[in-house]
Image (tube, rainbow, N blue to C red; front, side, top):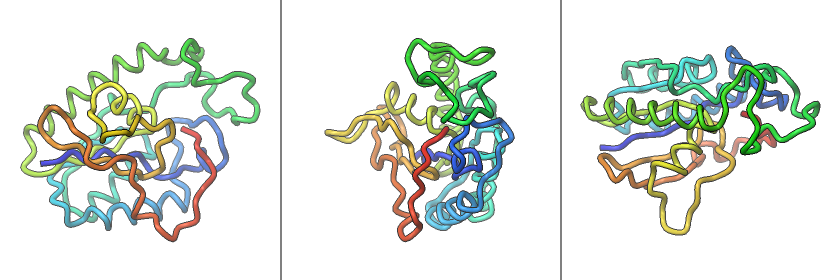
Length: 201
């Protein structure tokens, strides 16, 4: 059995390089990415889908549900880091590094609080995988993927947790523990689709 860890498709915020709002929808390109991902995974034995409840993840998970017929459960533990009052701000207007280790956004999550939430999300993923009757797909966000890869997963030899997680990137984790990654941050399903230069979360 495997866990398919997935970042959502490109959003309008990704495309405009804006710190994302919770209800930010997928862009047309993001919907194409999600459709291609769903086609890639439609025959991979996905029995259950666990998703962030933010709009961009919900829509990505809906494409997977349509292709696989698997039920979807939405959980806020899988949300992206909460950037509080700077959400909706164009990157070009920021005068600081929002990803700096010591930076905590006003009314948002510190790295410490965020990683603690991701730890709870990972416990939920393990619990859901144990109850699944096949492979589990987990649809979440770039910083969640990075936190998991850097602190919970055994990466392939010579590879480190990527700084940038591509939209609809697929990471395959062997179940059960010790949680070895068989495929990391793969976007083979996007071959031929022009690459976006955005990397916003």
